[in-house]
Length: 131
Image 1 (spheres, rainbow, N blue to C red):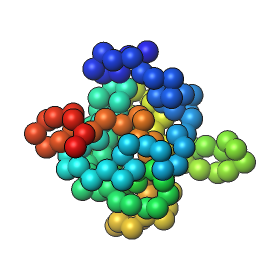
Image 2 (cartoon, rainbow, N blue to C red):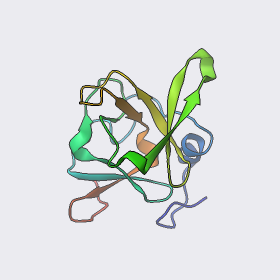
Image 3 (cartoon, one colour):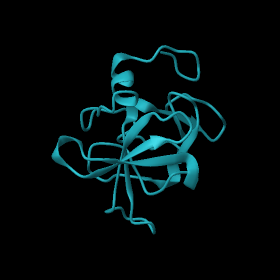
């Protein structure tokens, strides 16, 4: 399977995006990342989150208060693993991104807890290089 850049997805990326997996906490490259730009869906390239909404929730995964626009993501009830959660998926390609919880600091009160391995960062100049 390839991403929007024509690169092969790793086994971990396929496991998370297509099989609804989760990367280990504190292991993702964007957990402590502080770049200024936007985060795209690694699968299809859709812009999902702006770095201005990213914050350190202490959860071990990149956290955002809101998607870049309301229709960028969709929500699916997730009752797996004996829990009742709300799954977040890319609205464009249906890739699993993570979950949203009602304990965030922003006006919406939401915490979008997203797996790094299904995100791609693009800085304000359009570069995909992580700095």
